[in-house]
Image (cartoon, rainbow, N blue to C red; front, side, top):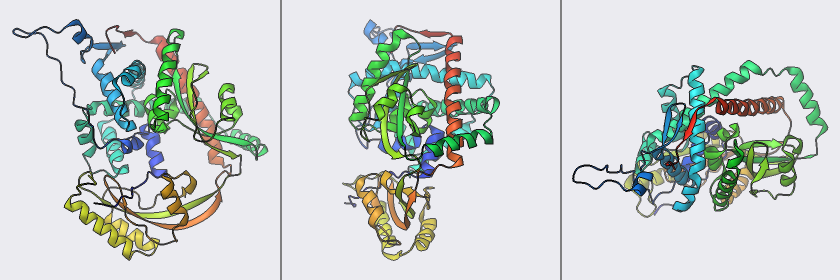
Length: 464
């Protein structure tokens, strides 16, 4: 049996950049279960000679039945089922059929929005090439230590159409380009704007600020408010049962922060809706709020941290890592011969490497998956699980860890530096990013409202 130590999910800068581009899909796959796969969809048998015709109930459940038509583009029950199944598997939770059924109306609304976004991208002649989709999928595989083609196999094994993931990636990339173009056309942030904001920030040093994740559920029609609130309550139940907030936000939040797993970053109360601001000042770190009514819909808030503006002393480490990949997913009870050899190789690395320079040389010769040898600076207090956080905080500099086993391979890590830093310092880049993000969100919401007003959307009663 291989070691019980498990490779943690590190808050690596490269992984966060991937999440921003791919709607947190790079993080999504790490939570997929190893067993309990759903059976692939089986098309219904139509009524033909010698076969009974489908009943009315069967027709309503027909996966090919049209659920909505958006400016001529069709969304079927099968599209909704595939997205629901992808979401269920991405959380790593076993969801009861009635829970998934409660999610489907909101999934339909999200698919409608995706159609509108793709149509607007096409109108603006934004083209997402097949190579961009392939590169995105390849990057997901690399960031999760998968061999090329493994993601396709996972989707097939779990009964999810590959098109479900491709469509989601395509919509996210296309809409990201649309909003980027809008910002370039309409937003001009000057040096004076940045300087003025920096002055305001410097006057607030020592006051509290909060790191927040959000899931925003839009309500375009007041008649949908009750459904949206029920959906929010269902999502909260899954979050409190253990679903990862970034994954749920990437799937369901209807703001641009969904592309970053719902991450708002560090904000002050004057940057929040008053109802949200009052709430976060009372929430403990790690808490998830009940649905909060805000203009345009409901928001679910996760409080990820508290600190004083400009003051956030924390331990930061740099490290090097070697990764020995498996050629097939690990079954801890029945490791393959290749996996046993990988463990032996990892143990050899741990026994012979005594510095970061040595680890870097070994890692460059060993890594076959694109996993970064140098993941950059890592803030220790944000690392999970706690056992790995403790390891990073205490292992002697230059000493290799024991093999850290994951489903897809084994890592050996060496900490190179460990120092106390003020990670709350206000930088020019932070201010620029904050000002741009405010415009991005505003333009995204305004454009979506305009698209809804102009669209011909036919929601069919037989769908969902």
